[in-house]
Length: 321
Image 1 (cartoon, rainbow, N blue to C red):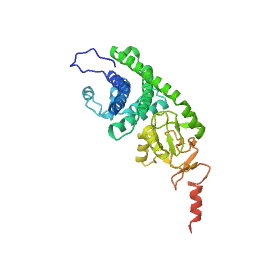
Image 2: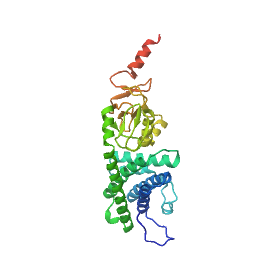
Image 3: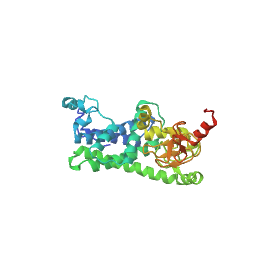
Image 4: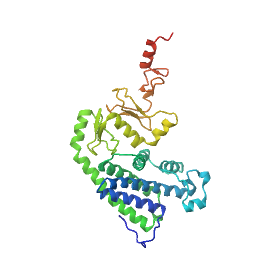
């Protein structure tokens, strides 16, 4: 962990340095974890660090953009830090509006880790060290690429550079762990693919090492559950706030019965694509349509108006005279 050359009673960080210090601390806690508490605080520190790094890039566009309500932006409040600030989702939106490029897949992983951090901070949770290490390594790699692309290296001070060096060193250890772990479980992954046809993204560690069946298992992180709960965890971990906000705003929660296997294990992602955790069924955006009567997705070709053929058949069998 990078050390600061300061007097013991001095506590002063720039916004970027504060974020990098949180990240460095989080990676240190994962590497040296002795108990579950270390892993918990590792996720909290990584999440806080990522958010602060993004906020610094927003600040470089305009400090007013750090205010949740831009109309209330006030320089005195800004200098004191006594204001309601934006969260990670807001940061990403405002950076996008400012023309700062963040790839959709990178955004998805950052938001997924942020949801994991929120759940750990505000609710009960169950995680494994492997899942935390794997997902943490992925998002920190994204953050380092973001810093390289979105910040001018000449503007970083000595301590910020030292923290970046420390973070890069720890990250290479974690990436090495992921590579070695994938090699160690390669035979088991091949076995799962041979039995189930393919493996899909694990909702816990985000590696493509989960079998699709009524009972799922991930040999990378040890996650095991039934397909329905795995689909819910994917919505919570990966889709996160987007899914719940959609439901709250009068939309639908993206968890359905699969038209291929009839298990309640089908999810719709943010891009409208479909995946079933019970059978591995996939469909592209637009391939399925949600029936206006039963509320379940069916093949778009099998509709009469807004009614799927199953509901149409049931309707015709009833006495509707």
